[in-house]
Amino acid sequence: MGLRVAVVGATGNVGREMLEILHERLFPADEVIAIASRRSVGVEVSYGEKTLKCKDLETFDFSTVDLVLMSAGGTVSKEWSPKIGKTGAVVIDNSSAWRMDPRVPLIVPEVNPDAVDGFDQLNIIANPNCSTAQLVVALKPLHDRAKIKRVVVSTYQSVSGAGKDGMDELWTQTRALFVNDEIKREKFTKQIAFNVIPHIDVFMEDGFTKEEWKMTAETKKILDPAIKLTATCVRVPVFVGHSEAVNVEFEQELSDTEAQEILREAPGIMLVDNRDDGGYITPVESVGEFATYISRVRVDPTVENGLAFWCVSDNLRKGAALNAVQIAELMLNRGLFRRLAA
Image 1 (cartoon, helix red, strand yellow):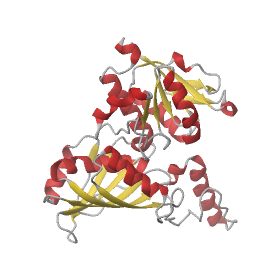
Image 2: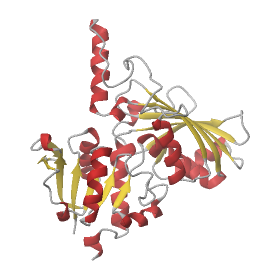
Image 3: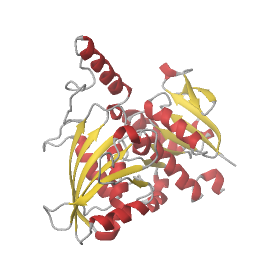
Image 4: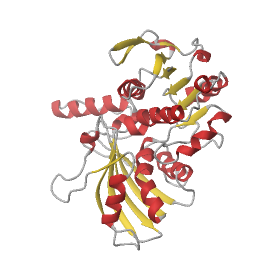
């Protein structure tokens, strides 16, 4: 017996990716329903070889479904996720709306699967920020071995993290530069084509951006509150795929070769670390893949017990849609859905 699954925000980048991953991973769904705002009712989206017509969020009866994958933004989630949860359906939310709520588990299945058991306070589970998700997958097995004290991470985040508008702006600016047209800025604060922008989300009083704060706060909630982390988050002219340069200081000694062995065996990770030309992964190569890729593992000689590495992942997948489906699979394996548990 399968589940009835609704995808809210089905016309967006992540919503479409959720539908694709549900199909790719053969998620046991008796029915999958695409849901969007009223202006997108009737818009067609793909689910495998099927075409689904979007239904209206405002009028849909969520008591008829078991699982809702929510990818409609924080404002919509704040209004609708508690209502949906009260019907008995489980909401896995991709926005930042619920991540730091103590009643809501923040889950990366490879890292803190047991936290899912607390979902029933609101029937909401939060998906982490895309840059946090791939980072904690890489940190978890190393933390288990040598205990992390401090992390310094610089991100190189693709424009798809800012949605379809971000992707469109990179494309139109790039084309405009080649034909000597006016460069128009609407989504980003500065030109993104052939440029990098050290600014994602809003600035906070301490000079960090909210994206940088999210990485710190979410890593503490998911992995270990004792870990110190500082981040610099940068938008780069890449369509899909987030990259991170990570420096880690451990309590115990950990060699680069042992770290490589640990990462090679860790769930969700693909180690590609050949110390020669092209022996590493770039964002282009991560597109469409499930894994978080780790390359360039090496000793950081500037601190005691330090390592540095390069981390790449498809942000629309592990950073969003894939992680949400993996959470649903985790719940399914534990018999946590009400209809299957009855």
